[in-house]
Length: 121
Image (cartoon, rainbow, N blue to C red; front, side, top):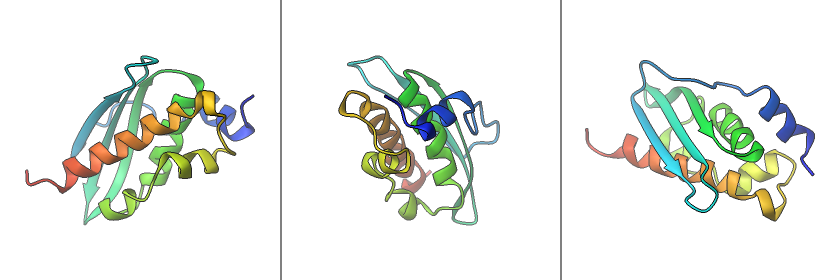
């Protein structure tokens, strides 16, 4: 059911944990399935220098959060805005409809994070 990419990110999550010196941190949830994703990022020189996540959720939610942190590194907020549920799903080999909500949760986190980074402090 899961692609090798999903299983790899689930079994070996990248950038899991707290980010002590985060510029911004957001938390999003899916009320239907109960998944919760906390995404934090450190912003330097107009780009996301580092991103970390904490996720309580299904295999796909954890895999998407792990991939998301890799995708965010080095991007400007405008570039980060281009990360969508569909793009994450594609990078993970295509998620079946039953697990696509994991990619949507990660995409919601990016949108919320970019809004927070772009808003006046």
